[in-house]
Length: 492
Length: 94
Image (cartoon, rainbow over all chains, first blue to last red; front, side, top):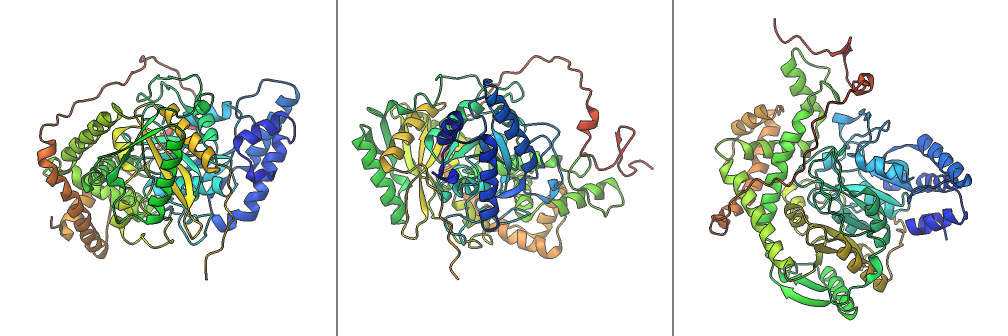
């Protein structure tokens, strides 16, 4: 088997049986990057020297028979809004173009302690604001399945890197679908964990009441393996909780789904939905039924109000979180200023891209006195209503299944000029963030053009184990879970 | 909701951002579209009028213990202009 075809499981057993060394593995990944990165553009920064050194250390430790971590020698990538000590962390923004964090995010520290090797930092929409990775200040990432299509976003670089065989796992962050939608577009697996399961210390904040970090991998098992490593309470993130209700997500994954009650919300399948998407989801549904789950159609209105509430709350929080970028302590500083006021104004105006400015403006507007009650307060109430709806459903059902995205990977440039159209593509993913509940996207088939289709499984708070069991059972039945994209040039 | 250029300029001032006249005009048009969509919230008045927002407090705070931090050089490694351990900015008071 070629290295780029392998899953994390394959790598683990290969290293343990000494079929290859960590150094050979790392060299293999950079060779793959040399071959395809020019076309895909998944990375902002590569950390080759550090990775080679780390691989040497792992090999020596293994030779000495030392106890190495569960991810020893595993080449991984990190979204560029998660701090990595000594490696540039830009958030794909001119504002942080030269920012080198003096510390590791908790998740990065945990991955390093487990023996994982960081290959590089992946491209994204600036400050994670976007659904196509076209909002990066540095480059546009292409979908490895077809280079004229977007990879989704905002964690598009992470999803594309895994899909193209340039990393075996990549961390993403998900505020309204930013892990799941790119995973769906790139034919890989992506999990947004329950709010509070994974520490955000060291994640550059976008909307703090919604943000979660999670893994993007080729298979469901790899996703569970990574969550086992990164989850857990962190004194440095007060929103994290200690709720470990399983010894290991990975160990429980093969328990099957006999007797699981699954709900399908009919509102997620409107007549206007692409029939290729609904057909693939329905086929998966029959498979799950065949595996012993019960399936019921239910009502869960997904309405414009939910999407509006999401954009109001996330923009309001962003306008506050991004207030820290002032060109003084770190980040971009304008060269043109006469006084402190102008320094801040010009640094922010020159440093932020258009979508980031749009969200800061929207957030500032909806928080302005006179509009606060009409927008922000009302949005919070809609959020509470959505939470209650999910609570009600999860008192009767184990899981909800839906498409991850209402659209297939769209052509680069198609939606960039129309922000509202872009926002509407998040309609199926935002509710899990508003309710703080976990959700996974896994590939369930391909459309006629050969582009992947993603299926979303949503669960109640801290039900990751159940989600993994269902996702794994379905993945096995579908025979997907280790594919690497065959890179196709854009049609002329 | 009608948004004009002046309102965009006012919000920009609050957000510490600068827009050209032309950009502000474009933003005003975009905002109108987005805010029109946000108006869907008003249709939910009946559904949400009884919802009370409670301050959630399941956060566990750690003990407030003093820790000595000595690596200030590392902490200031991204500062653009530094002088004897202080961040230098333009003169604020004449």
